[in-house]
Length: 290
Image (cartoon, rainbow, N blue to C red):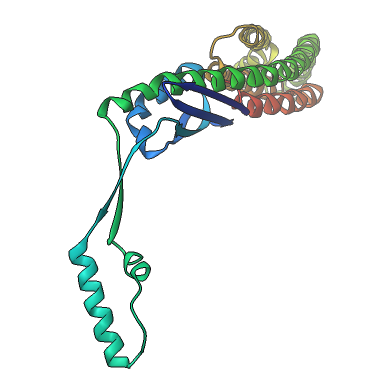
């Protein structure tokens, strides 16, 4: 599911801001963007995020700021500066360019001045409290937003499931009439064969078997209702049920197709088309469920 969460925290002179964005995805895929000085925390952050988000594309952005004073030193490469000076003087003489070579021009050349920031090695270890606090805050805010979307999604899916249940009841009511029509057709065929003197016992067996197969779709309707109940039950839990619902949708589609094939009835075919339309909407939404 889609969502956004943000958190900020400070500890031990460290300030951290975390932003998390999620979009729909069949699996859990976590992408991190960290400052170089926090790369050592990547695995910890991944584990923390995975505990909150089990499905979806998750992008985590971490910004850090060290509020403590740093030991800054500037190193001068005198030999390099002298080399630059000599080269510039030679070029000046060659091109007959008058004037003096200014110091600021020399120090602007690459490598002449190097700024070094020295920190104590243990300073890196105090980053985690601030990162963890900001990360948890962002994850909580993300969860709240996803929860609101989940409530709307639950309502939408429940509506589609109830529509399929009503269609299933209509199919179940239509089933006895289908059996009766098959029975009438079989009796008519037998009467014609007897009248024409073309009665073939093997053909009778074949027609009787076809009648027996198509006359009863109660098992498929019962299984369909069972899958609907299980899916509705999934929507009432806080567990990760997205893949289970996808599986149940596949099973419901199987039962609906079998009902259409066995019944071979215009009215049931119409009801099946409506049911499959509702089921397709559920299938699309199921991919968004964690």
